[in-house]
Length: 395
Image (tube, rainbow, N blue to C red; front, side, top):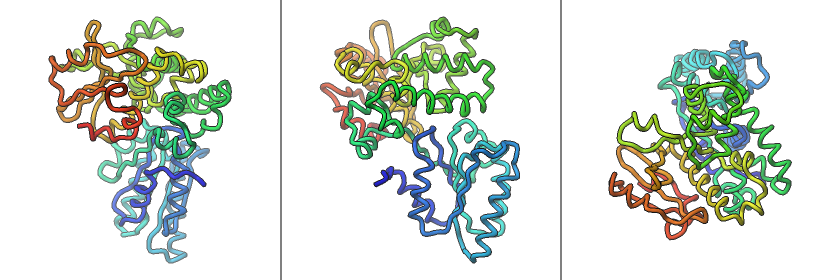
């Protein structure tokens, strides 16, 4: 039986409610957007029309109008009072948002009940189009990386397996062959994401530099590494400003973040050494892991994987939960993650086999008086409970 992600119910609810907004399903590659939409359309009682922009000439902006008009014509011919129009990979057409705005407004004026769902994997292109042309006309449904609970329900994974192999459903059948698993992650997941969703849609003047930055950042997930030291490991020429801008782009694409140090003023925050953090632990394992059996029994190595998994989980819920993620480090003291939402501060320390408790958490509490200070793991919130909770509930 095909697994159904919990968010499917939200998509179905939007399909069945009266036409009000364009619905935009956005998320990283290979998290199941198209599959989820197929499931929703199969369960929805309304007639539907599905089109995919993949393979369409990017300059053929009239394609959107043609498929839209095709749906209208079929509605009229079949005397359908309402229907659902789905366009997948919409961002691959240049100026797509302007055409969508025009056709949507035309349906609104004529009171046609054609409900529109747009799917896209390029977060940068979607965001640009939505903010520039479709402001006030859309709702965003975010599909993130698969959580432990989802991988457990779909594939029977243990928590340790999810921490190590991450949350890409397409990799689940390959974990017994590490060489093949790594090749799939790098060639079928990472390469398309970098080359199509990042380099082709952004002003990336040094593609090789971007790729090297991504690989280094993934291998250092859950660790601090200054941009200067990062630059020293890159083979292509560049500068700190370029590296910082590329890191911001990777963050916007839900691939790799450079967490900033928590501080009371923005200037200190922006000048801080970044703490690299992947959005999916599969990316850390692909570039740094050896084999599961070996890494799992190494206390220091496994502690790093656990901390990276906690960071990925926090980042995955940040946008929906309305909070931002930072770290704190002062001399030998540190706090793994600091969450900030509407002026409220939470301090989270991950305690596992990597290290015991340090004085960072008490010191941070004295300096900043956070709303809550929590330990995740040993002597705190069990990992199994943490990876199933809504992070915003901690506030």
